[in-house]
Amino acid sequence: MGANEYYKKTVEVVAGLTGLTEGEIVGKRRMRELVDARCLVVRLMREAGYYPTQIAPIMHVTVRWVQKILECFDDRARYSPDPMLRINWEQAKNLLRSN
Image (cartoon, rainbow, N blue to C red; front, side, top):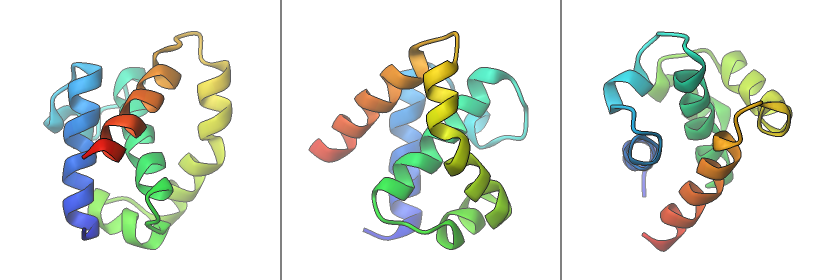
């Protein structure tokens, strides 16, 4: 599966889990829930084997932004007062594996 196809599938899964729309996830707003959803998309794509240089152009962000998200994801998931980031991450991984 190509990076663009996997991105679309990942955004769809994350949108379904978070209750956000795909448009909100790919948008530029900075509410915590939206940023968490974008972080999930980046982390899931990286775990699927896509490199920051492949992820960045699809998401219309810089490679450095993708790298920073990947560096901070574990701490963000661990220390977030809302456990939903961790829960959604596990559920999204399972859903993407099964498809």
